[in-house]
Length: 285
Image (cartoon, rainbow, N blue to C red):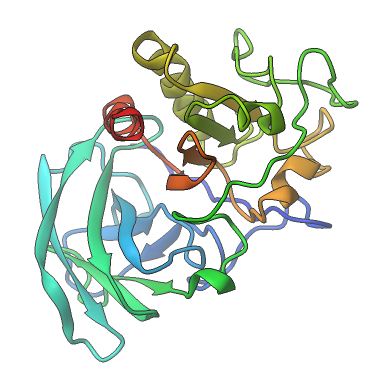
């Protein structure tokens, strides 16, 4: 089993070495525990960027010794409760998705009202994993239904002083031929990935980008792909303008926009090829 890493907070003037503390912080890998449960919950989604509608809540299971559980059940059930413990909607399930550095369960449900909630997983802590749903106007990161703002991301023709245009190893990804600004004018859906494989503290950025590269076999003629690194330097300290342009305080994130540049979905923090390809199919259908 692998000790779980911590998710970093990003933003203007914020070093990658300044870690998030507390469950209310943006993008925390928050371990939620309790007495007598079979496992604890590791919250793989940022806590302050969710808005009413379908809510995606990826969760990883952990032992009390803060180690990822690699051999969890194939499916898990869960429910959402409000701040007073009242159930919101019915129970739902999620399948186990295996990806480095640890499997996750992509719980999804619909919440229509802003507020503070908890995801209570069968067999887990009674307190669940807390999260908040905000009004779209209170969230800096583009959300479904909003336009994805154009930004002149660095490209092969204009690296804009980046120490590395793409830190994916062993080969850089092929998503740096056009800027996001240009991609949004090409009349096709856009998949815009913001993340740094070389400096990602959670270990999920490289597998997420690998999945995106692999998806080109199915969607290359249907989707314009763009990648932007999080840091401008080769030490992983100076935040890139592309990050602040979309108001991100966490990584990675994948913005899926339709041919009109409207965000259809945003995948945060972790995904595998199966989940990704399913969402890209919806984007292009």
